[in-house]
Image (cartoon, rainbow, N blue to C red; front, side, top):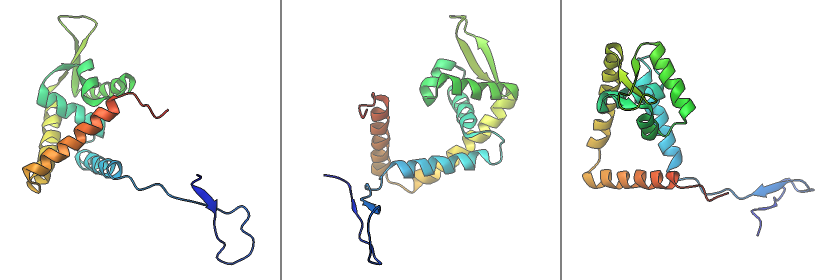
Length: 164
């Protein structure tokens, strides 16, 4: 069965070439998640002169301490080239430092510089305020349900795409 049909012509006359299509049901999660993360990015980057990706890397480093490029890649699921660009920009502004791992010279460890720590603390404080306000509006059951939804999305997205 087709999702399209000839649309009636409200003015009468010939309908040739006019095709009506049924619309798919609106998505229930993805648009809201995208809009929220976009607004979050705008909020945290508006006064700090960092991109959303840079802000999240800085926040991760201030929360978790120095880590490898691989750790950051796993934390954010960025392509290696994208993450390298983010790190290059942060390094150029002297917000992060790169050093070779003592246990594996092929591995780089990323750490905050004093200037980077100052910016990262501002990013973290802003994100923490937003998160606390959102959590205050929810009960613990809602928070657990939301975490379950996010975990389900992560699981689906981590699996191979079988739609093709």
